[in-house]
Length: 124
Image 1 (cartoon, rainbow, N blue to C red):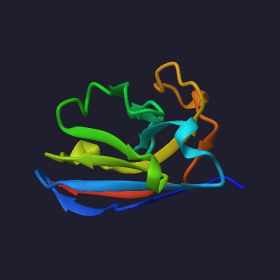
Image 2 (cartoon, rainbow, N blue to C red):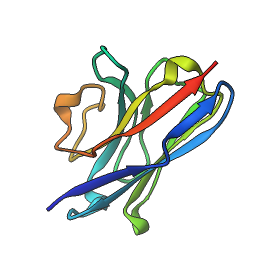
Image 3 (spheres, rainbow, N blue to C red):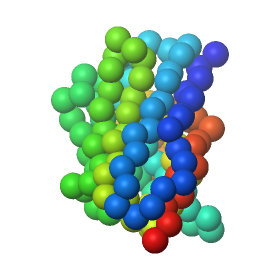
C-alpha cells in the first residue's frame, strides 16, 4: 500500500521559513517524480513545485519562484519543500504527490498518489 505522509506544517508569520517533508512508503521512491500542490479555502489546487526522480528537473509555480525550493533524498524515500519569505497568501493545505513520468506536474490529474496534506498558515 502506497503512503505519502506530509509533515512540518504550522502557524507562522510573514517572512518566516518552513520546511515540509513528505515520507513515502510502499513504492520504489527513486522511480517516481514528486510534486507539491496546495489548496487554499474555496480555491482549486495550485501547483507549487515538482522534481524529477533523479532531481535533474525542477519546476516551480510562478507565485513561489525564488522563495521555495523542492528537493528529495531517494535514500530516505523523502521529498522536501523549503519555503522562505512566507506570505499570507501562501496559507493553504500542502499536499505531496507522486507520479511516474510527469510531463510537468502542473495539474493534479498527472499524479498517481497523494498524501493527506499538512496545513500551513501564515499571518501578516
